[in-house]
Length: 140
Image 1 (cartoon, rainbow, N blue to C red):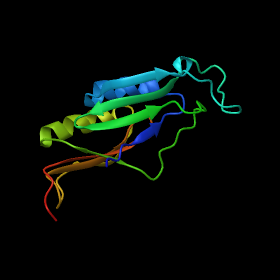
Image 2 (tube, rainbow, N blue to C red; image 1 turned 120 degrees about the vertical axis):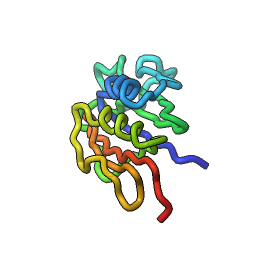
Image 3 (cartoon, rainbow, N blue to C red; image 1 turned 90 degrees about the vertical axis):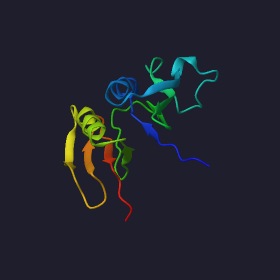
Image 4 (cartoon, rainbow, N blue to C red; image 1 turned 180 degrees about the vertical axis):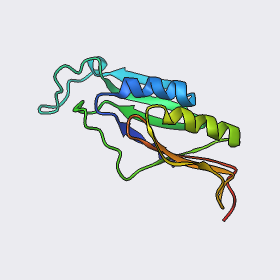
């Protein structure tokens, strides 16, 4: 059994995919636009003008898979109450990933040494996704 995050970017999915490719080395495993769906959306679920929006995408980030979509394309995507934890191989990589994710975003907790890791920081990226970047995790 695996848990895979599925993020709804509400109209900014392609922009987010390109950002994550540059920032953290994400690779696209699969991507389908709404116009390429073999079925029409159910009545009441149509999104006018969304033909080129992302219906579903899967990204590989390290050893994990993250799924993403444009959803209803309302432009009001929110990621309240969740964080994605990104485990870096070392402190230098953690610093690089943290800086890249913070480009256009907002630092919540600067990278620093903690009692549980040699490097840990929290940043909300430009899409509103909270990331916890960690390296040198200690057993507690």
